Image (cartoon, rainbow, N blue to C red; front, side, top):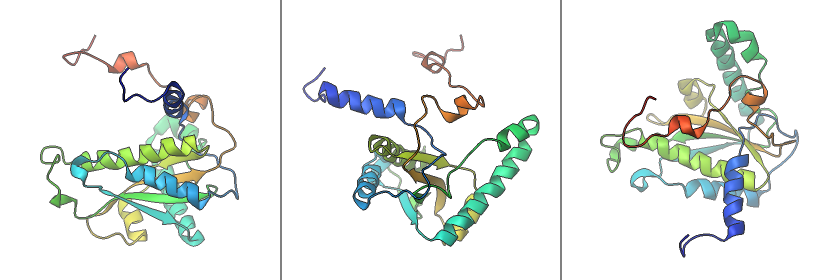
Length: 216
C-alpha cells in the first residue's frame, strides 16, 4: 500500500463497480436520467486514458424518437443477418434479448472522430489505439453508470456505414457503439449471456502467462 492509495471504503467501491458492471438489455420503460447525472457520466467518459491525448471520441445523444426507431431498425436487420450466420444456433440467438434501444432512458452513438490520421504519437505502429482509447471512454462511462445505479448496454449489431449515413457523420468518422443507458429493473448476479446459457466466462488463469506465450 502506498500513500497514494484510496481508503478501504473507496477501494471497495471501485472494485464493486467493476465486479457488478453488466451489459444490460432490460430497462425500466418511461424512466429518465437526471441531467446532472448524465453530465457526470459523460465527464467520466471524457477523462478516459487516450493515446497521445488525441481524444478520438464523439458522443452523439439521440433525443429524436423517429431517429431512435430508425436506429432500432438498423440493429434489428443486423440481428437477423447475424442469426442467419449462426447456423444451428440461429433460433437460440433470436430468442436472446440483445438490445434495449426502444426502452432505455438515454441512447448514445459513440464514434471515432474524423481526422485521426493526423495523430501519430502512439499510433505509428498501432493505429488501432484510437479504437482502444474510445473503448476506455465507454468503460469509464459504464463503471460510472453502475456507481450511479444505472444500467448500460453496448450494442454492436449494426452496419457502420449505414449508421454513419443515418447520423450524417463526416468522411473518416466511424461509429463504434450504440449505448443504451438508464434505470434497470435489476442487476443480474451473472452476465445475461451466462444466465441464458449462451456462453460462459473462463477463469483468469487461462489468460495469464509469464515471459512467453505459454500453451500448457
